[in-house]
Image 1 (cartoon, rainbow, N blue to C red):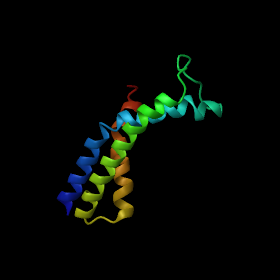
Image 2 (cartoon, helix red, strand yellow):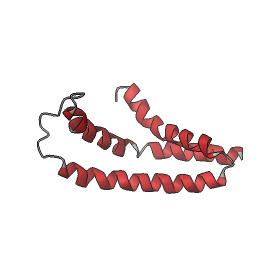
Image 3 (cartoon, rainbow, N blue to C red):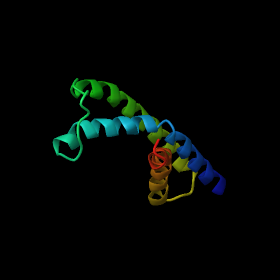
Image 4 (cartoon, rainbow, N blue to C red):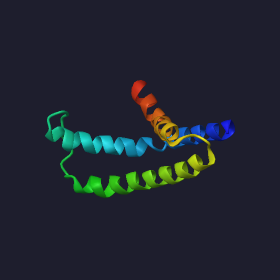
Length: 107
């Protein structure tokens, strides 16, 4: 059980490296449109193409990553003896760890 749990943790950390791209795309989209419309952020001054190109580009990238991540984690979760309420939050945190490490270190 412990070996499988460590394998699941390692796989989620490794999935966190390519997760940097879809997470950045989500942040860029959110900071330029919905959050800027609410006044929480400022829009990028050179971003004048509108929302459609970002939806067409970021949509498939985020969707493919979410599908791969969820399919891999469903298979890993079934092989471990961990409860769902322990496995899923842990896998999300481990997947976000590389992105958070980049943010903390200032890129």
